[in-house]
Length: 185
Image (cartoon, rainbow, N blue to C red; front, side):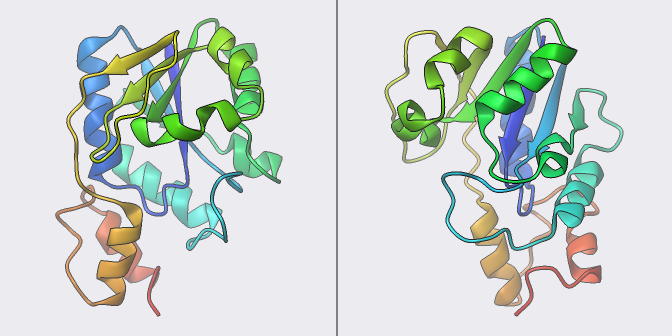
């Protein structure tokens, strides 16, 4: 099975990567494809880094790990990124697909475009998130993943404050951020 993991990834960090490796340990998943959103329907405002920078940071983070891949499908498609549209695209490419979400998505999942169709089209794996105890919807699969207390907004704030971030991201990502002056005031 191929799984889709969507998000802003602005920037990608160990809190994204480590729980996915737990998923690999528990389930027969061949590959996880990171799909950075063009525009998320549930996030106000804009992305802080360009699509190109976000994809480059994902590529740096997953380099050398055959379990991961990245797709620019939602970015090339443009407009608001709806999960159902992305799943339909990947379903046409792969026979069995899964969707990975965090527990924080459970509270609004029934507001997602065609949420019931999402459950029919794919297996939905739910990763644990600190501070969230959403009710698992029938058909979803809870994953006993590690909770890594890192957020992209925390990383952006640390950069603005001049604090270190190398311990929060994969090797090479901090250097890329500093070299390209991402998230600096």
